[in-house]
Length: 312
Image (cartoon, rainbow, N blue to C red):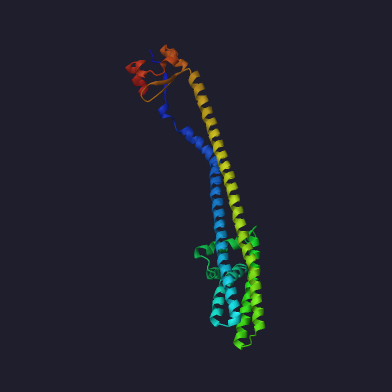
């Protein structure tokens, strides 16, 4: 007499080809979108942080600019009356800071930009060496951007006044060297110096405030963009999860339908030989309701010869 045909499926040894196939189908679309969004988020964050750092570098540079200009104005005010060459030297040393930044800006506005001259100018302007390259990049690529464009306009106005201050220094030096300085001339020089200094202070403040406003705007943009990208990434992950669950449920449904409707007796078993699930056909073969087979050992139901043939 022939032994009953039994198909045994082990849950702990599931075939990995179906999951791998599903992953291969997901990767070209959903995973690629996810990777692209994550890369965009990282790139946007790096750009925004770089712009914020560059704006901070310009604000620090403006601090050196304004301190040097104010010190030069103070020393030149005294030099107008004393004619002391040492005071003139101190004033010229101080003026070298804003004038070096002026030369750096002009170098960047050339066609093509003179990057070496710009770098040297920013360094002579007492800007931190580690900030110089990012200051150059920001001016080259964002000089017409909102807020920074306004700062550049204030910078140009400030440079014109510093050059005028240097002109007064040259004029006073020539007059003192010729010994042709009168009290009236001294008073006129001092009045012009004070007027230039008073004019430059709000210009310097406007330059920094524009950069501060720009940095605040960048922070807001970064925050909003980060939230939107997070939501986009979360949305893609949810789509991937739902798609995967649908495929798994569909596959499981097809298997369960085939399992229970099969004419061949079938069992799902654990590796230790205990039955997890049985179909109707095996119940009829073994003359036992399928639900009562759950949890039993296969060896309790079949003789040794049948077990040996199943193992083979």
